[in-house]
Structure formats: C-alpha cells, structure tokens
Image (cartoon, rainbow, N blue to C red; front, side, top):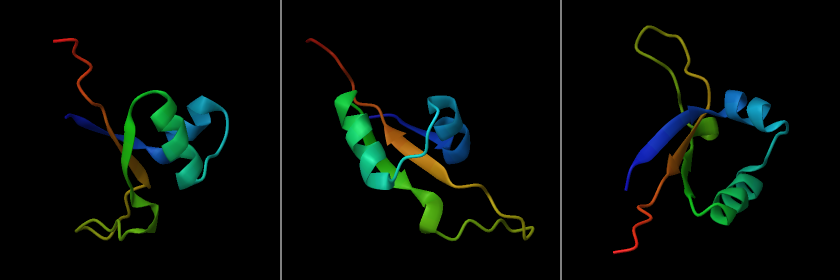
Length: 66
C-alpha cells in the first residue's frame, strides 16, 4: 500500500483546525485511510543541524473491486 508524507502544520491549516493524533487517526478511518506515523515526537534533525517540520505519514490502501 502506498504511503504519503505530508507536512502536519500545512495539512491542518488546509483543514481549518488542529487535531490530536487520536482525532486525526479517527478522521482518517472515516475516509478509509490510515495514519501510519506522526513524527511530532521524534528527532527530526537533519545532518546539517536544521530540523524538519513534523510530518504525518498516511497509508492509502488499494480500493479495488476485483
């Protein structure tokens, strides 16, 4: 199954509100997708010392009828 990675702040801004991880996981379930990972609490330091913004990794299952 493909997994997409999105900037958490940008996605929540587009959705018009902030979600807890649990709330967002439930929202994903309603749409038939799955929150695979929330990188908020992980070490996001790059090799050059900068820090990546928090990301959400969302799994998109195949929706095939066959």
